[in-house]
Image (cartoon, rainbow, N blue to C red; front, side, top):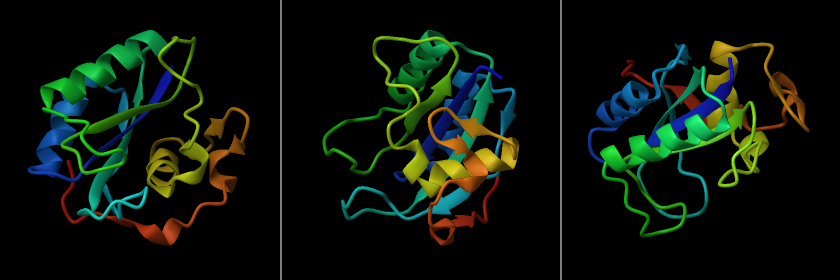
Length: 148
């Protein structure tokens, strides 16, 4: 594995947008789908979230993340607002000037931690240690009724 990406959608066909993003990313492995309350304080609908493990370095992971969001018609009107598809590069081998790695908020987000542990129970987040030990509120993340 070279990259960990987090995908979320809370507008329109949420599961369809996750599928579109995964098609662009071509993951090696994908977590189950989780439903989570929005993060960041903006009133909006709940998200569907997955984590994907991909074979890309940081630059290719970033390129594909942006391409997936564009294909999903992502608009950036409100910071942390509702979106058709949000793709974050959580961690990747290498570097890219457009990215801060690891993602600066990954260690605080249960919607990243819980699905990541689905696909890699022994995952480590550089600078923060074992993902399983990260102090996030896992009660905010629930397995979604709809799965991929």
